[in-house]
Amino acid sequence: MRFPIVFVAILLLAVPLPAIACSVVPGYRVPTNVELVADADLILLATVTEGDRAPDAIPEQRITVEPLAAIMGELPAGPLAMPGWIATGAEAMLSNPYELKDAHPQSLAGACNRMGFPRGSRVLFFLKWEGDHWRAAGGPFSRWAEDVLTDDAPWLQVVRLYAEAAALPAGDRTAYLTARRDELSAERDNPVAQLLAADIDRQLAGPNAPLRRELPPAPDDEADTAEY
Image (tube, rainbow, N blue to C red; front, side):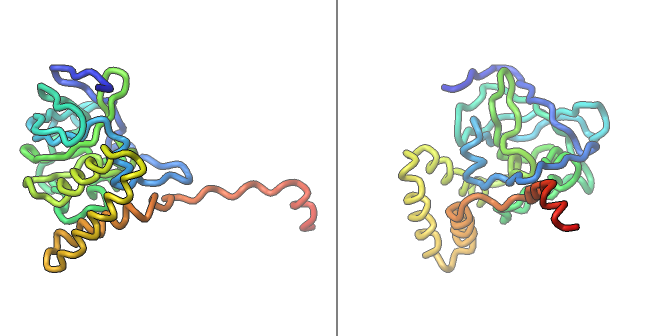
């Protein structure tokens, strides 16, 4: 075991909330789903139970989640607390159950990560242990927290598959993913299988393109002088 399990609510590292806009450095790449799995110490299926109701209620809003299952890592014995708030009204937007590539739309506003969750939602959280607390894994615009309301949700299925691949020796992972992609692709009358196969194909293609290009190097003095 790489980290201790605390049997009380564990506070995650505070992250900027949507009131504060974030930006990424040139060259930053949104992690692929396989990279997101590899970066996590705990992939936790949990139900959102309580929390602050308004995003501006206090400086560090919190939600409480009740662990249901650990897809990777050890299942905590009690509730966890983490940054976020209980989303209501128009903000209570659930993840698209058939979206496997892009993060929840809320990640595009302010904090660059989803922070609002409807009470009662089942969410798949990707967490990383840092010193004495959990924090969100993956970085900006990652799929670190997506709703999976049913046991056969496509996102839950594909994450289980990537967790299985991550448990294999590094040299065996590509062959495993390729075989699973081909099996799913063969189910031509199963649209969910086709979605899963397409996502595996994206993982096999390698890292995502940078969101912002690196700045070009500054011209040297000689090159500047030669132009005049």
